[in-house]
Image (cartoon, rainbow, N blue to C red):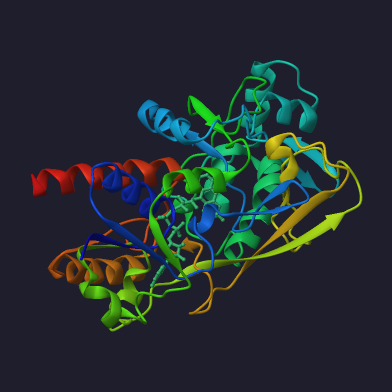
Length: 367
Ligand code: FDA
């Protein structure tokens, strides 16, 4: 009998498995897909690591998490500096002095702030919808060119139908700084994310192509404790209903050119362009290959059974999740963790942090 059966080989499961193995525990990892790594898995083609489940950029403010991942793989100095493309006009993101100077020809931060102040519509009372909220924060030009179309595609609804709370604040920088993230540490694993997962899982027994919920009789009693990182509603056979997700569809193209768009991440902010982002993977790792791979991301309605990307955190889903979470609490010797079991958007650093905390808690319990 194993000490731990770990269901799912994403970051949560792999970190947990690694830490327990390092402490002499016996662990078995089972994974539904035919590869390990969960959503950070990359497919390598002609020396280019393709982020198969969406672009992944590692960024963190936790020094211990940064040091932790660097123990397994070296990270490069990639800094995410996406470019927005609005009908062929290119703007730097996040909104900063480069964006404002391109949009209005302004030179100083004072001029940019004045321009935004002129364009902002001050509303009395609460904003009624996302459009009102965005215009009250940033003004009409930035809203129209860089927020409206992108947001409408992402959510499949117009900004006047979307609730204001989706945009609580808009990061605006009055400096010439295109670094998308504010975190202290950032980069991409040199050689790709698979290196990180392979190093975490080194020496650990892993079985791919095994769905725990379909083979529970076989696996349930194979370990003292189960770490479950799959969807929480699936674990309970959807008996209270299904949690909803926002879907994504990816179309990847191989192009016979060395450099297609000059940047890893380009956001397409016009409503008429059906995709939201175009990812040129080689730029994450400064690739010099003679060819390139570009993935277009299309937001999509999600249907049960499809890949679950972003949880839809409205009241209905939150309530349903809480009901499942209270069932989960009653499960003996099962720990639920990670983005699917907690029905939560987690960045990679947060999921590692959470897995490490889970290990600590578990060790304290078994001491
Ligand atoms: P993850 O989903 O990775 O792993 C769960 C694993 O469990 C999967 O491999 C699944 O197949 C398996 N599984 C599920 N049910 C099972 C069952 N019944 N039996 C066996 N196995 C089962 N973060 C960040 O920091 N920077 C970024 O740039 C991005 N970008 C990004 C883009 C997109 C489109 C998304 C959706 C997410 C991001 N993220 C991100 C977040 C990042 O993907 C996330 O933090 C981690 O993948 C979460 O790891 P988990 O282990 O929790 O889940």
